Image (tube, rainbow, N blue to C red; front, side, top):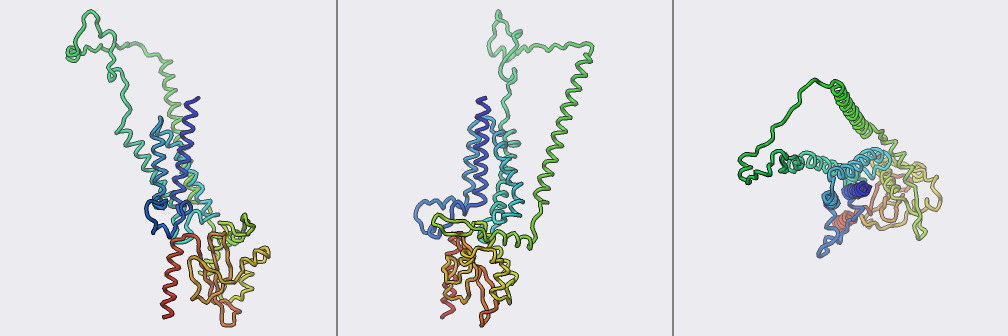
Length: 373
């Protein structure tokens, strides 16, 4: 009982470490946010772990598995379920929460897709090492009587002792004795039944395993993914979701900010507001279903300073702003001379990566100063 409890605890800790490995490989920016000041920091900082953050959980996992018995069983029981569940969840998240599967911005990492890729490489390499290389390089010790130095009692003669050299020169192994006679057909028939039952069970287990593998592959490849129009409708249903901070401020949820950016990017790429008056653009965005207080916050057109851009040299109007307090998705518009028609809609993001925001802001300021010379 105690042995089973220890085995279960070791498997549980292994599964937690495997999940930590997957999270570190998928979402490193969420665990250790990039900091522009880190490149100027002296000495050792936590950002040293950012690039290869996934390596450390993997190292701890391998050490944890190696310090106890039943290493292969613990590793497979702990790592494979995490990998399989993440693989099955991947198409569902791709259809409902794509920001967890693919990066919203080009400067982000590959999210869960990259994490699953790294974990697949790790699972394949570790399986080969455990099932092939370790089996041949470190075989199980031979515990047979001959290998262990044991000898039949009939070979030993207490009245005539011999030296080691004499025993080595003439081992005097006992001759095997075989009993021949008529076959016991009942035993033969029983043995044949056992063999048939064994191969039948083995065939059934193999068939079930192949069926489950094919079902998993079909689930991942054939799970229905939304079209561009369906994805737009999904995002518009999410982008106005809100939560209330401790100070009473109403902000968007993290999922709403990602959805809002995707909607704004769609508007910008397809020039969906070209020729629209602002009121018609509001109707397209379905702002009438948003509570009035939050709607005024979304449609605030006052000047705002974003970490990623300096609007000093920009002649554009802030039309829609969605933020969760850290990330920003802002839709800017440029109108005609009369201000009653939208010519161009542009999307601006900030807060996803402080290093990239700082680089873009400095580049924009230098570009603006060059234009004034």
